[in-house]
Image: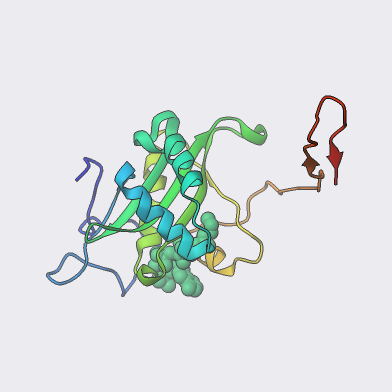
Length: 190
Ligand SMILES: CC(C)(COP(=O)(O)OP(=O)(O)OC[C@H]1O[C@@H](n2cnc3c(N)ncnc32)[C@H](O)[C@@H]1OP(=O)(O)O)[C@@H](O)C(=O)NCCC(=O)NCCS
């Protein structure tokens, strides 16, 4: 077990009492959160595939290279395990002066396996990420959600997150179709 692994005997701070937590009593699954290992990646890919329907092994290897390795550069990729089986993950990073704002912690992804949901796993992952961000001296957590994803919004709201002062803006900038002979033809923008 990693030095940073903790079990459910140390409860994360919560806003209201819960009744459905996995505990440390005999026969109850033990929840731990620790830094991701290379050997966790097949389980992470499979977990993501159950949520998105896409098996993106190469993508997840890139994410592991960037966010794994014990949070180098204030990056964090944590996994939750129930009885040592990966059942969730969270990924985040401290970013400096983005959008003119002082350094803050960004949460990029959080996923819990459907069979392990509503047991407190997501809350515990978020609490562990927040703890790491606090240790790095930041006092604000930010994330973005799809506007139609009411599940993730309910979850973040339950953990104390509220609409912030940044507003995402976007526009369609077209898609460049590479031409076979790039020296003689211009790229086509659709
Ligand atoms: C959102 C998600 C991470 C929550 O994980 P979880 O382990 O089930 O969450 P928890 O058990 O810690 O629940 C914490 C709180 O979230 C809220 N919540 C969780 N599931 C909920 C649901 N299905 N409906 C409404 N609120 C819910 C509740 O307020 C809950 O507190 P309570 O149990 O005291 O009522 C999980 O459902 C998930 O992975 N969803 C899909 C992932 C996703 O869409 N990711 C977006 C890309 S980042």
